Image (tube, rainbow, N blue to C red; front, side, top):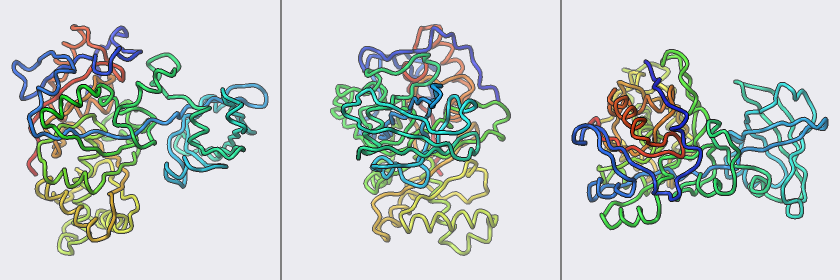
Length: 424
């Protein structure tokens, strides 16, 4: 599948619009007259039906970029990905040490020894952060951070870390990015990149949505760098990295009761789609007759999901779950109800899981028929999601956007896609 298109460098937004809602909005898909319509983002409320629910990702971006210095004076840069052996909450609360899976800039020049990571506010940060390189795996590293002074690791990052802007912006982040590269929905620390479709929403737009009786609901997917890894070969050989998700009991109840959903961002969409497959696996684990009709590997995966949901641990959704011969559940709402039943019986307040799900053309989206998203990088797996939703017409829309001077990528303009979801 060809995911390339011509993107002039002049179209890439290196800075956000003056106002959060100051971007443009290109609507395209099945419900758009003549295929394409140009709007401003402040027009979004009038484009959504009354009674719809706006679904957003409430993850918060970490100050995940740390720059350090070797004893020899050479520079080393760390990009935090995931805490190793701890939850994000536990790692953020640590007061002496924690271990993270990281990417390392300058790794080839760092063979051994400690790396000192200082603070711009030494009077507030009486500590010395040390990083020791541990064994490499899958092109990443495990690094142990230790420090003195009694501060939490969250405070360490606030003082010594910076927001990790995408490399195509060709600049370091500044304090304006500390605000504008976070959405208004951001609550739970854990991402290394913003769910950028949410960056367009201002308090004024949210008020206009509320006045139109469009409610808001939230999920959490902590965005990892794997989401943006370009497709460099056949789609079937592309490897997605797992991203951590959480959805509360209250959010599941809204999912079950309000079927008209407007989903903000591909991360939110992947979370809601993963909920369906979580329920499908759970049914296999609880229905003895269904186990005879599926491969043994699926039975084992289903058992692991059941055990995780019962204990409040994190379940897992593999990359090609939709191609695994797993029996479909029925309606999306019925699948959600089954997860609510589990929470009711176990007393858990939320469903936690990691997902590798990859949505590509041929995948049938079940959770929504409306998606707010940005314009994505050529070769991105995110374009796979766009084509799965609206088909190849995205090429016409993107070509129009380039010609009309729309701004692309993380700080760029927005799209509103409409399509017909699968009923089962």
